Image (cartoon, rainbow, N blue to C red):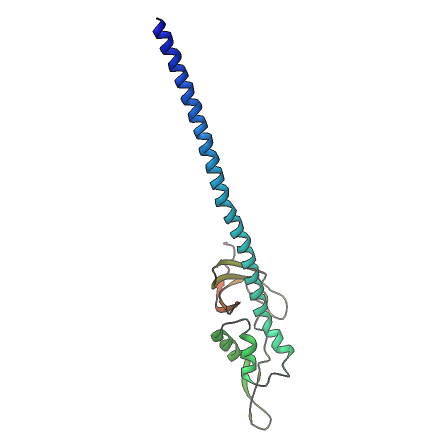
Length: 190
């Protein structure tokens, strides 16, 4: 009986010792896991901050590119050649896109004497700032953004709601619009 009591007491001590040891081990493991989690979370938060800064840089670049048409009209008296227009648009657009836009804006006309002259197309504005810009993805050299235009039914220029998907590329440290495509915004179902 004496051995039985000693055995029970010894078993109890070992049992509580194991629980205590396991609890301490779990606590240490939890603490290590928490430290690792903090290490993992800190860079993510930092990346989000950088991503927000990058997104703002891209939004600013899009707004700047879309304002270049106004710059051309403000300086129209100094623009004497097609290349002048291309140079301005190349500040915010890739070269091919700048050439395409210039093809629309710089036109050939005939003056009163029947001579060919070249001039800016005095049509409606080509660009309008969107109601919102959302940067979908970006890396160090490429980005994709949505330029959302709400429906505009009044004013000199009207349109249905639509979204322009813009692909951008960083060239020499400057974000430039390289490709665009329009997606119609579907109205509410009836």
